[in-house]
Image 1 (cartoon, rainbow, N blue to C red):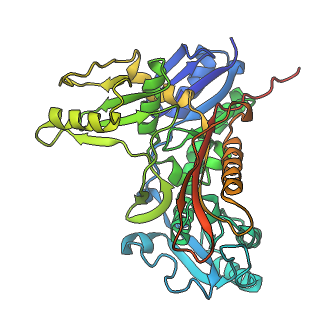
Image 2 (image 1 turned 180 degrees about the vertical axis):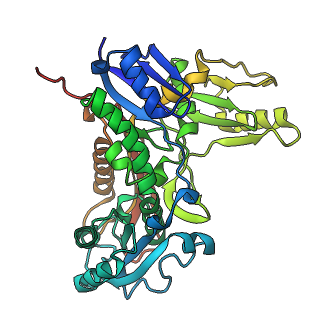
Image 3 (image 1 turned 30 degrees about the vertical axis):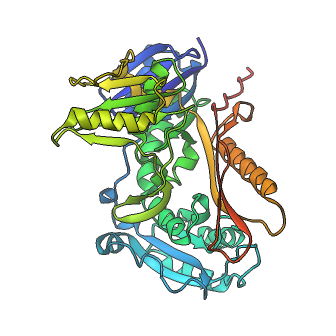
Length: 437
């Protein structure tokens, strides 16, 4: 038996074979201990190809003074009207903020340098952060499309301080403030995520060092552990997403509507070809607007009157007239969904860890493409290449990639010919090469 995949969360660990059949299950301990027991008592450790973990949502309340984040914005004098963290809630700013400054640098929409990067100011800032900040966030104007200044500043900061340095350009988000906020939160929560990943890494290092460790994102796709350490905000909501994906896998279908019924509420969402529907809004974390786009399931509270009627209405909206989509139900749902045939997948209590074990890797692009040097089709092709490259970095096998259609929107609010393009590429994780004795 080889090619096993393990999914693990705070409640269970499951091993699946290459036909998605359950080979072993563990319950009721910490994720690291369940994984160790699985590898030492239930299956041959050498048979494991990969482990996908669902980490608890990082919480700002966990952070201590060591998590204070220094913030460097590259973009003066053009971006000084709203300083970093100015729109943050007072409590969160007081909890996390270390030294904050803005330096000259950055680019225009078309790639022209708006001001030379002030490396002397970056170095001075680094010296002022020593012994104060446990991490640094760096964000540059138009740093998503033109990351050179961010990278140069980050290199100086990492060399001077020897602490995690997170760049805003590592998050696919249009706005400077959203990228900056995401980098700050990712930097603040990096240590907590790193500690949880470290526990699982230690088990694999001792039992099966050839296996790859992934962490599940909030959209139900995976990130390699070394990248997950830098993207804590992207991991929020992973447990819910995993259950939705797992239900579809257990039902043996590629697309379905899933009703995940819990004691407090029922969550209704569509899964289509391995992807949850994207959200039109950006996620807020503790009142801070980030650049992370969150899936948009419909949550129907059981505490309000008329739960059955509201659930049926949510189901109708989610199906959006596609009555051919199967409706899958997880958990306890005593109320009937009138007129809608439903299926309860087998082993539904393991849906989340099975969803993790079978999760795919994805890369998304959502940015403005300047079209002064080419036509719309060239921009679309570049967006597709960027999405595919991001998916491969996330662990996808390039031979298995499939793409969503490229969505385009005209941008009348920028001073050059441009279009906003969105596309996602997704595929199965690349299996590690067999080890030659």
